[in-house]
Image (cartoon, rainbow, N blue to C red):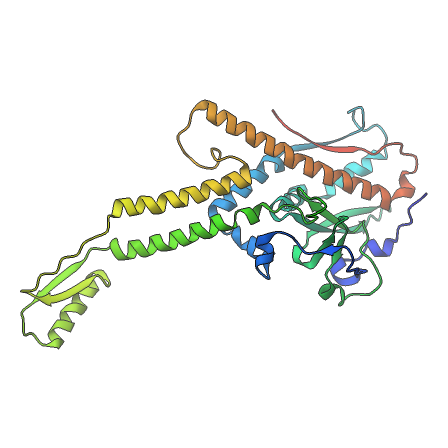
Length: 352
C-alpha cells in the first residue's frame, strides 16, 4: 500500500502552520522528579550547563562521536552502485552534520529532543530534501505511553485545528525510555544536586576568603580621644585594607582567634572535587578523562575503555536517527525511488 504524502504539509513549519490533534487519553507528565519539582524544569536543566565542569564533560562526550567519519553503504558494504543512490549522498551533504549530531546527543542530556525538519524542493531534480533541522524546546510537547509526541494544548490552540503533526516533520529522539517513562532518562537531571551543592560551596568559600583572607589592621589611639579623631583613623585604615579594621584605645588589648585556614580550605576544595567527580560519573561514566589525578596506567586504560563504550552507545543513537532520516527522504520522494530494492545504510566509522 502506497503512502500518500501531503507535500504542502511537510513544506511548512510546525510553529506556524501545524496543529496537534490533542488527545488527553494516554498523555502523561514527565516522571522525572527534578523536572516536576519546578514549573520550568527544562529551563533549569539548560541553566545547569553554565557550570564549567559539567559543560566540559558534555563537550567531551559529544566530541567522541561528532568528529567520526560517516559512510553510506548497501547490505554488502560496497560502494553504492545505483545512480539513484547519489541522491541519498546529496541529501547527506546538504545536512550540517556536526550541528545535527549535537542536537541528537542532547536527547541524552534532556531525556528526549524534538527536532523539526524543514523540507525544500530542488529545482533541478525536483526532489524534496531535508535542509534545516531545528531543535525545539522540550516543554512545548507531551508524550503518551506509546511514544507519540503531541504539542501541548496551550501551544496548539494558537495553531490551525484538527491537523496532526506529520511524522515526516518531526524527529523525536529519546534516551533510555520505557512504557512508564516515555520521556526518556535525562542525565542533566542526575547532575542537579551536585551542581547546586558545588555552587553553594563555592559561595561559602568566597565568603570565607573575604572574612579570613584579608589581613586585620589594628589602630591604637590615646584614651580620651574624640569620636571625630577615632573615626578619622578608622577611615584612613579602611582606605588601606577594605573593612578588616579595628580602632581601640592603646591600653585595650584585643585578641582575634583565626579559623584554621588550611583545614577549612581543604574542606571546601574536597567538596567541590567530590561534586565534580559525581558529575563526571553521570555524563562520562568515569572520571579519569575529565579530572587530572594520580592513577596507574591500568586504571587509565580501564577508564578509556569505558569512554569508548559510551561513544559506541552515542554512535548507535546517531546512526539510528540518520537512517530514519534516510527512510523519510525515501517516503517523501517515493515515486522517484520505486525501483530501489533496498535503502542505503548510514554508519559512523569508529577508529579503534
